[in-house]
Length: 192
Image (cartoon, rainbow, N blue to C red):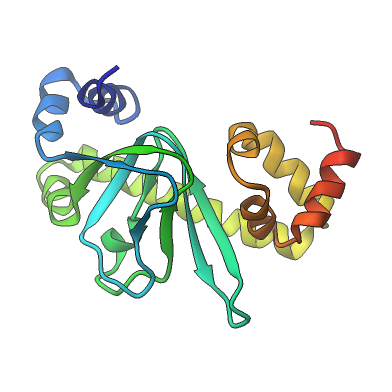
């Protein structure tokens, strides 16, 4: 399936738009292809776009005070990244890099904002997407505060079996707040 068709399918099924509206909105997107290990968004830089992953896998991460990379989240097919530009005009607090060859539909933040003013139903969909991203972050924070590493791994593996197979072990470990060797031990102990 070509990128334009993948985008239309997403707009119609995930955002419940009719064909005409989906076609109209699709004209606001451009398409980009990225090789594996490509930095798309630089920490500290301003970005003016949001991205919908059509094919591939990306991760958002930051560098902590010890110089370690901490994975904040992953995005795979039919998931968005670059929300920070929609929520704030501030520089990105995260890097975003591809983990696989990635194809994305790209839309300018100003275009999303204009569409939301013009189409209240779409504004609700965008609000739902942003809320969903916030809830994922909140859930991760709760898991860190209330669960042991083993429980965090089990939850993550059950909710994200594709990412377990596709992402590097060190990226998953940094997301879970454990070392790669601890993750290896957990994987041997727990067969999911």
